[in-house]
Image 1 (cartoon, helix red, strand yellow):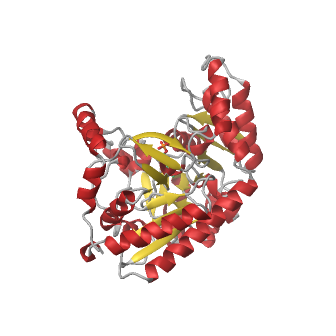
Image 2 (cartoon, protein in one colour):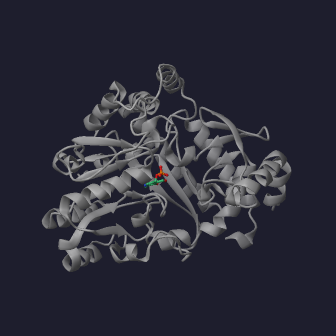
Length: 430
Ligand SMILES: Cc1ncc(COP(=O)(O)O)c(C=O)c1O
């Protein structure tokens, strides 16, 4: 049976439709995040509890997006709500440090051996921006090497080569492009070439151990080892962006894949659902941020905001090794299930990912990098809507991830919904 996903969506979300009209009058595109938009309009969420969302239209959705990996414990986990509330009630933001910042920094340093010192910020964007700034201050170099398609937030340096559709991101000074080099994902030979040509001018090589936005693609361990060797040979700090991938291991993806970077950027869940970022690593590099002896500046009114720190502590304490193992097992189960569902349909459905992160692709191409991943994005929107109409929420471009309140039952529901949505998808979408 082929259904009419857009009509179905409009008729079940009239309140969101009118909220969207109101929003569009006062915010460009009706939102303040480009990524949350989808046609015909996004629906508005009133609340979240565990792994479920309640929309303004009164629907309940199983949340397989978790604010793009932020809500690893699901929504409103009681221990986090209690910690944040208790901290907030004692005042929040003093222009002076608090014990909560020390306690969260200690937890990150304990979990991630490559992180000897850490600083807090307010977003993953700020985390990668400051990690890069630290590397530049440390090396005295200004050239940044990144992966083609690698997404590291929205500051100028990392907005280069992020859109495989060719849509130009304007508003970025042209000379930024001159000092950003890119290299293809999982291609050790190209990486060797880049270092042979420019190695001594590079301030840092930044990459995600698993490309999140650019396809849910894990790096080959051999590629990561090549990156480690080349950066070491040239005295270039290796920066892992673990804003999303920290959830893949107790010590992040760097522990899971066995490669040690010099600097790491964090974000998403380490603030317990409040805005957060952090960057840390080798003490000799991080010392550039020392307030008296360092050469780089890093400040921010909301850095190490006490309520954020309290939320982060409660979250990290709950996300122990057992919780991560369980999440990763559920992820394996989901990916295996998707492959079985795909085998029963004519649509060219593929799945990538690792641990509790996954990405569905509707494309004939084998997905190996940002370009092949982008090939199926447009077609996926129909499948997204078909799943959304059946109560399963994920990213419009096919990205998903799991939260600890989920069990095998939610994964089964996901797979049954995917099966039904594919049944209903018109042939032209594939
Ligand atoms: C890998 C990665 N780095 C950095 C960022 C930027 O984080 P934020 O949106 O908190 O600025 C993101 C956001 O999704 C991300 O996925």
